[in-house]
Length: 298
Ligand code: AQP
Image (cartoon, rainbow, N blue to C red):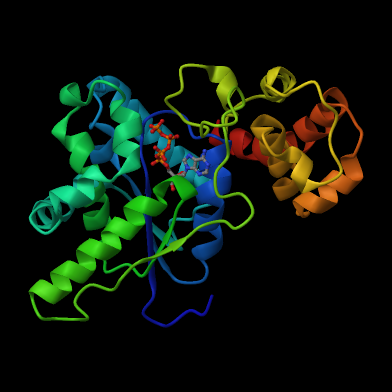
């Protein structure tokens, strides 16, 4: 990536629960790397968190916990701007203007709304439906050029670009908003649930066993990895044989990313092993990455 002097990075994390391995590998790790390369703005996006009802006391605790998680992961307030979204009224003000730019047809294509609203769309909040416009406002308010996010946010980033482009066209000012570029980790863009390899790891999943929390103890990590869903087949030697084995692929992907090796090389190294042995090694590499963060957070 070539960096220009006026590049600005922006990203946000919802205070909806404790940060997990997916948040860290998909987003936070990139936040930390970028803070020494360009002007960096990171936000705890509490207005996004209230699109689904939250008890005010729980929300307050989660805002503090997410901010502490930012610092424990390595964000440094001397290098990055770190703040809470609702303390800057410009986010909501620009969101309203962008609500008038975005088209209903565009919103109807957003897959995350369909997933989060589930079968009871009529009962979902309007906020959940137009959440991507607030996300566009978060980014465009600072004229950010780069947005580090997990792969699940790619569609929302594309929408932010469409909104910026339409605004620039409507008001005859082709450079008013830059078109923000997503920065998505190449080798691990989406960490999946430990209980279901087709669902992403998520803070709001009912099962604690679906995710590794950044403040989990060594014992908790070992227990969760031991219980992680796999299948009865041993580890294959090539990528093709991982097809239709999403849980196996997820664990092998996490191991490869954390050991800085290509998935193909991990498969060569682990070929023929059964998952119980591999899981011990996986626990060890997760513990050595995650536990130092958890200790800083205490
Ligand atoms: N499983 C994941 N793999 C890779 N990246 C992920 N991110 C989230 N889950 C994964 C990235 O983390 C950043 C912050 O996400 P967020 O907490 O603001 O919202 P989210 O994507 O909705 O995350 P959750 O954990 O699923 O929260 P809930 O359960 O509250 O909806 C984003 O860059 C996201 O891509």
